[in-house]
Length: 438
Ligand SMILES: O=C(O)Cc1cc(O)ccc1O
Ligand SMILES: [Fe+2]
View (tube, rainbow, N blue to C red):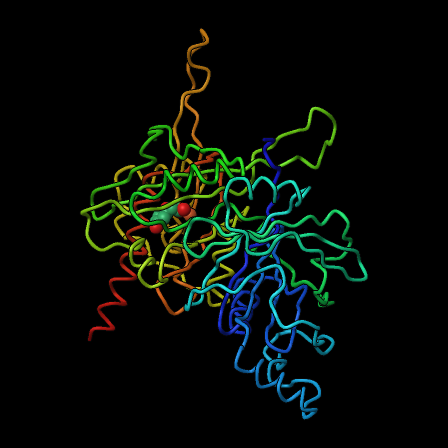
């Protein structure tokens, strides 16, 4: 079976209060609200920054739907006011329309009772053939290929369930659609906020929190169904075990995978294959290491799911500075991180200011490798850098958070950063638990 070419279209949330998450993404993370769909029972908001698009799905208000349907049948109700109060949207734009149809479009309602990021949606060339492949693989199909049209054309999409927790995937062929987002959405003509000093270009990776021992099965499923391939995060990583980081309170196994995307730059034959920009990381805790953030996620989320999404920024310093002013809260790395032997020199060698990084809580790791070795010439040391920071959880539970990442040549993850990020998240969770028990 030919490997399907995928392009990330959007990542969708399912939340109880869509307007609150919208506010957070727009006001704090400076995403731009560009399309929305409001029905009698549900609201869907699409926001973007660079090529990173989030879709905020508000859980349908089923009680309201039933009462309203009844009222309407009895001729007691015209347009429904209750669900269309969008006064919290920080833009002046035309009053929202009430679209026909009660359900969410391009998604399904997740059974998850807490707020969650649960759908990674891809653009594909041929939904029909992908659907046949997925059907043959025994995938659970939630919405078979379905056509949706509006004045700008039509798309075909299907939705399938991943084997990981509450994660779904929507596959969309939008080759016959010229609109901004997807049919059924009202495009919002609001000026994009100047991205200014907080530029995000794309999603760098999506990390799933998985139960212990499940990563290899998940990897096999994604390989079989979508042609994903293993991606090595670290040169010392073992093919069977993944990248294991343990000791000093850390007990983490990471396994990464990537999909193939068809380069849109040159569509000449042979069909160009390009590694995806966005990778998938499977994170599981190691046995016997005590309480930890992956298991906290599984407990509070009610099972496996998307633990975090990493947003790529070409200037992490400027982005973190801006986000601190807009009210984004970041976890604090262990203070010892910046005073470790050699860290200051390492940061300086990367062209960064150690004091500034420490003030902002940005982590920097270096991947050192030999270049030109074994070819008769003298090996040269090549240093590639990686800077990262994690936000505090976005919802009220210790579940989903965002990451900012800037890569300077390094394509994997460094152990120092993973340890420090783990400890930073753990310190936050432990502190919150202490506060709650007092
Ligand atoms: O960043 C990642 O995708 C992996 C990761 C997960 C986690 O729980 C803590 C640190 C870390 O680097
Ligand atoms: Fe990450």
